[in-house]
Length: 396
Image 1 (cartoon, one colour):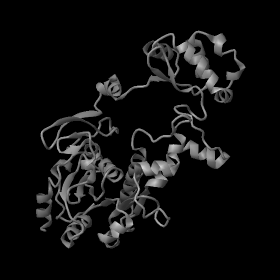
Image 2: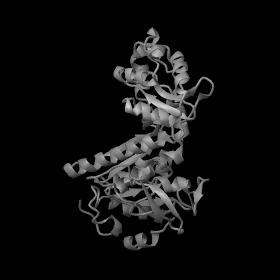
Image 3: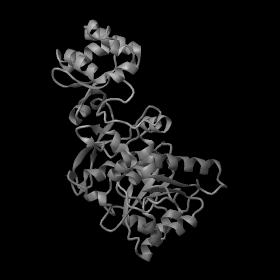
């Protein structure tokens, strides 16, 4: 891809051997979904410049917890990029962004339509037919919600996702992680990569304008629950950690901690019954003869299973069930999740020195490319850390 010379090239993005080496991404987004989209491109080798408003991306202040000058929330989705502080409400700020955008391969932004209009972004987008443009929006353009502010929790509520999470005692619950923002960011990254691929294959065609809407992306995450409603009119009930269509497929109490048992086939069911050591209690009960019957009688089966599981601790049961070929896992908290050998002895976590000198463990990309996980080339930047060099390169 040919580029003008005024883009301030990043030496840490050159000669990496990564798939997106040489690709330039201008990140105008804030908070989570947009920065995550741009971070994925950066992890894959793209040279990403993050444009921050005066005072910085608001997520820098979304603590506690914090580490150094920034919230850990910011650190989570802002690696592998440089930072420049720009006031888009000024003509000079808009001109600087226009110069960067003109030399980028892709732009990522998540402004409300009214904000984008005030900053001149629709006109800028129209003037750059060769630049892939990714918009993270509250909801699909043209609909009544497209111009309303939206956040992860609002999307979880409006999408119906909260209605399939929780129990009759708790009522609707949000997920423990910002899944709406994450899913939307992933769709944004898919759109970005798709746009870049088509531009490389069909350079004479105008670059794509791709929208990843928060509401619709979150509803796509309903998957089987949405299909059950659309195809069979089934409105999900509160099932807590139970699966709507498979039993046993949930956490169950043992003598100490919970164990997750995930029986997906009849063979695994028979193996579970044998491993439990009391086949007369379960295998000969007509209520549990098929998965459909087990779904119907899930509460009775839970009572029987937990009566048996209560005789031993989780570690003993995992050893027993794994030997029998029954899929199972401990229900880890975060310390246990990071301590398990697969993670602790692997390379998913990298120690990174931050701008203020603090050191922290940081998640790398979960992808492996040709057997190697992409490195963290750049720690999350301090606000405007690279502003002077970028402005000098642009001769602003």
